Image (cartoon, rainbow, N blue to C red; front, side, top):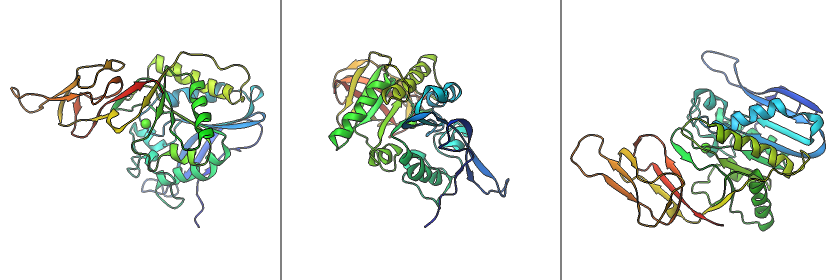
Length: 330
Ligand code: CA
């Protein structure tokens, strides 16, 4: 059996705070014995649980990396009971390139689990989380946003899980995060996801979608930072009460929540994010990108609800996710 070649440059267990790297050997044309160096901070205080916080699973999503830079700088071992492992740029090559998937091997980290110790760079990162870091963790927070091609209402998310106790604990953690929206989600495409890998190990798992468009805003960063601290309070790594924040509960009960473009061209949103729409409402037009005088393709709401996500760029391709409509309430 292969052994994962990633090694931390700092202790994952010794008391105190350390900044270092996960070093992944990566031999290539411009560096024969080179490495990919994933930044890592480990803060170990008194006895208590372990939280594993990650951003940059997709390389073009920024609220998580920003919030985790703050946390890595500010968290003090004397203030915590337990351990916090912080990896702000999980798929580091993708983060450096500002792209969703890795430029090294073209792989999407969040579709690469459980990974392979003898695979590509992305598969090795997945395997290291799967077999080393996640087993150490009681709680995993993985920040996402829409990246360059999607934009989201700011929500924390827990998945529908089969085990009722595990499900309830993940819902409670999601609510403690305190995003403006809290979503109960059934994934449409969960094969190879970090989410499913963590949940299958029985860990508490919270993920987010906090915005998108390939950037962050002051508001979305504030949500990300508050959520990081709230979750640490929720599992008693930090003392004190969870800072209360009003949150609207959303659910995506069926496949018809997801709207995919039926044509390619110039994307005209007719309704905006956060708007309440009724089934059958016109939500977008897609105009031909090669002529005038031809009618646009019309996209209608497949169900009633709130527009919780939308395609971000001005041009859209056939089959792109155009909008997601969520229902209020669990
Ligand atoms: Ca993402």
